[in-house]
Amino acid sequence: MRTTGIESVARRHPSRSALRREGLRPFPPYKGPQAARTVGREWLSTRNLPAAGFTLIELLVATSILVIVSAMTVLLVTTVTKAWQRATALSEDLHHGDYVIEQLVSALRATRYRGRADGFQLEKGSGGSLGADRISWVKEGPELVGEESTFAKTFHRIRFTVARDPESGKMGAAFTAWGDEYLQPDDFDSDALPPLILSDRVVGFSCRVATNGADTGEIEWLDAWDATLPGGDSETNHVPRFVELTLYLSPLEEGDAPVEMRRLVDIPIASEGMK
Image (cartoon, rainbow, N blue to C red; front, side):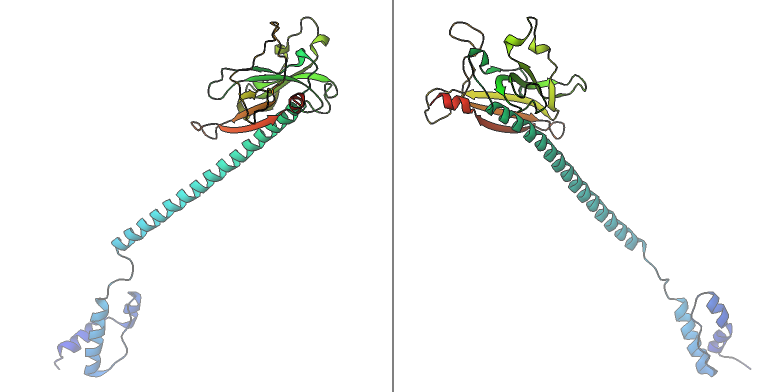
């Protein structure tokens, strides 16, 4: 008995179990000539379906987008972290600067003047743009030296500048203190006293003073403080009315400009002497 082409295709069609092994959908159990035509048509269309998945172009586009998003995220996190670190470092530096400058202000306002030996002294340093000035004055009280100091209840001279710490080797805001000159031995040298470091975050210091002459309503800053008495003595004979203090804090990063802190101090004893 002759068979048609469609029936021949149906006979050559794989079994249902073979289709399952190949991952194809098996055809329904049709019978008769209609079954041959239906099964052949479904089997041929199933064999021609494209495999499920992504093309190479789609994968490349997705990978590119992922790389761009990841790079932007890393850049954002790095920028925020760096800004937070700078803000933290600046806050800590300002805290150190506030401490030093408050100590200086309180000590200067405790200035005492009994005579020519107690005059205010200002030596301009050669620290370049940072400044390395040195100031010295006589005071009374625990300001700067502390309550436990032997000088807390006596007159003593203070010298403030930026000096090198003998132990760490770092530069920092430092002071030395000693009693009245006439109480010191003949070989006393104040420069030989070890400095007491207040903060190593302060790397420069500059100072300028204003005359305590006639009150003109304006601060008259002096280019230099005359430390010589009319008779040729090497000690200053008075105390300035205004002292402007400028501290230079360590730069946050190499190449940055130092952070400046400036404070104007009105010395009470000089103002009282003008009345």
